[in-house]
Amino acid sequence: MTAVEPDAAQRLAIATDGDVVRVRQAVRALAQGARLSLVDQTKLVTAASELARNTLIYGGGGEAVLSELTNGRRTGVRVEFRDDGPGIGDLDQAMTDGWTSGNGLGLGLSGARRLVEQFEIDTAPGAGTRVTIASWSR
Amino acid sequence: MPGADAARLAEILESRRADISAAWLDAVITELRGRTTRSEAEREQGEILDALVGGLRHGGLRLTDPAFDGLRGLLADLSATRARLGFTPRETAVGVFALKEGLYTLAADEQGTGLVELMSLVRLVDDLGLFTFESFAAAREAIIAEQAEQLLELSTPVVKLWEGVVAVPLVGTLDSARTQVVMEKLLQTLVDTGSEHAIIDITGVPAVDTQVAQHLLKTVVAARLMGAECTISGIRPQIAQTIVALGIEFGDISTKATLADALVAALRANGTAKSAIG
Image (tube, rainbow over all chains, first blue to last red; front, top):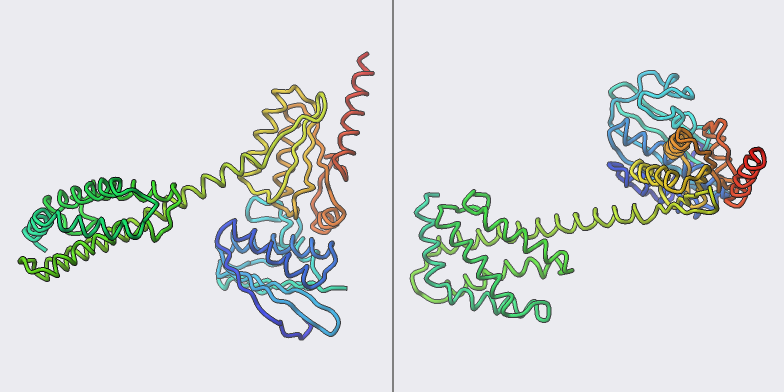
């Protein structure tokens, strides 16, 4: 990832369905503030929605850390999702379109990667999961 | 603590009841001026005191004791009523905590009320206050849940657009509970109106993620099983691009950019069917 320091961080707990909505709204507000295009805003918000729900359903709850980014002229939004859940054993399988360990469409994780500019995932069985996404203004 | 103590406390409350009630009532009336009448407050306090003394007589010393079942029920009812009437938490709690004012009058004069007994009574009043507060919060939670449910009903109207065409304009977040309501209403309306076309308009849905898409797909499939053709309209450019990037397949489900387009398509399909028959 580009070496930039976040301007300010905002932490939101993810423990209920309502929290997923709150994360989505907070990400949208930040994305608008960072002057992302309408398409990029919607993509980032949707990715955040997917990952927040994963944190809730598969990670057993956790938190989202939202921060604004600046890199010269460009501004961006970074969101980090953390949970202390079981972690992901087979990451390649988890990132495959249509594969799900639950009863969703199996597109959340793989789709989220396609929706944002930067995507990083750090996980190990028993060590929780940490997913970081970021999108920038054009 | 032994049961004898409780009996002694009951005795104190009974013998000094007039003094306690007077100070208690004064404190409550000062605090709740205009929100309750003196006779109303007096009646409530009488009931609380009766239940309190009754509980003590049966050997209860903590509010959690079975002897205080009646008192707890009384306080829960009182708090729930106040929550519904829009009392603030302070106004609700003060009704109970002001009982301490009555107890302090016992400490002020010297008619043989021991410090130990007073402390036990004050501690009991603290319990009552906390319990009142908990009941108040629970009642408020219940009211919020009730309103959320009402909102759920309100926010999902199924409207008839034309003979044989019904539409559901969706606004806001589409979670599992709402999807269930939408689906049930849509299917019922299809039956009631004998419609063959249903249009689900998602113009007001801010983001379509995989969960929302899955809910939409299920609704469409259910409508199809009942023999109705379903169209999803109101797909804005940014939503379309997001759906493509996510990789969601809508398969052979027809989608339109606007509700108007969807209506035209439905009418055309209806017209073709009619001319084919005629």
